[in-house]
Length: 327
Image (tube, rainbow, N blue to C red; front, top):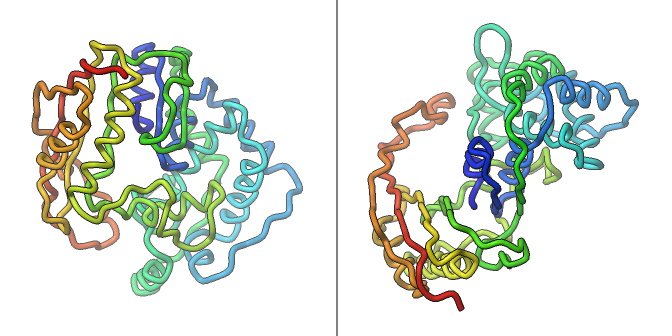
């Protein structure tokens, strides 16, 4: 259970899985990764959509004319409208996930890898800042052949025929979901809850949220977002998650939790997690806590948009046994 990565890893191992995420963006990406399809089928679905005589409404504002080439934006809007009406087949789910991945990112030499003007890949810059940046750097959007790019990415992601496994993907709050509705008990749980103070995921993903049906402006709140008012309250909310998950697990189940922190909150992530597991009071036992290193071990997308960086805080993996009370 968790975001799209645990479900995809389970698929690679041929294991059934249930994935839960409060973000509709993460859920849509996970559905695409779990789709049983082929590059040819994904390209065909894309071409069929673009061949339709579908009327689209272009968003207003400088951002849209500076972010995407006029023809690329027209194709993007056509696909968006079609997928909002129907995204039930594996090919369409895969296409939606591919578009979410190539929607914005850095410009590079050679064939383009993203549809947008210069932008980080992992977050979408706010419109006013982005427009000022593009004008200052004299950056203008270039035409990107959407079908060609989709075909190229589909060849990369869907050429290997992975095993078909039973899976459920749910967009919801892990504190409230009735896991018993899946009719199974879990033996393994892999998850990474939001870090304390990290409330920027929704606004940072505003452009991807727009593509799956959100507004054309930045969204700052999400109904399933946890409260970050204090470490104590945050720990209590995590405890609600552990209690709910624990009731759905076998007595010998195991759980791995990736957790870290951010600089603008003076709180120890290790203490927050340990307190939450203790407060859950449902038979949880911490077996091992291991350092997961720093996110700076790889390339950081903020470097591509001139955002000042600070050294990230160390992350930890918590290995937990879920034995005990199953009330």
